[in-house]
Image (cartoon, rainbow, N blue to C red; front, top):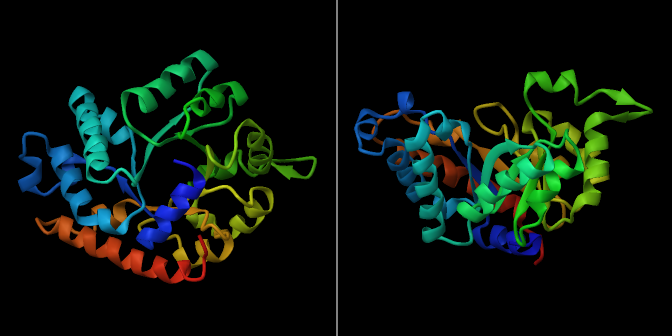
Length: 274
């Protein structure tokens, strides 16, 4: 999927919402937790309730790997279910890979050849050869960690040398490895004001923005500082949607939360031209 195709999908759906699929069996309603495949059953119901309002889904690998073989099987079923439901939905493997070149080749094969993901999150701190294997698959994306929203981000990402902060160096150098059609960047919504500085360096790239909802990020601020003339945003909400209700109405309520965000996003998208 190219950036232009992703933009068209966003306009068609009137949404740049990305729903994070992070299932925890201990948090599932009893009726779902008792199912033969509780992780997939939970995801399926969430997807059925939200797919009309979302442009993307983002399963976080930790929430599947932690359940071993059954968890990874549920992840595979989930991704294939989304693809069968709607091939235009963008699916991000939130795996935060990044290792020496030959290892990254195997990671890339896992998410792009063995499972039908469109993108994968990648840590860039081992440099170019750890990222480029993910860019060798036509139509697939590396989503590079730039400025994250966690408290520990201050430990390294704001380190300044010769007037340039580390996250700015990541943005500047990594642009050389690919294009606006295969690289996007993670920027946390809880640091939305930094999007203005980030847009000075990467004006045309898509940004994946987690942290809206349960983490307290503001959608209005993300749009104000980060939207470009092709939207350029995928805004993720996980807990704020999938755990909005803990009863057997969880999927219905998740759909309502997704619809509310979609309706707000539709207003921000008015005026953008294909």
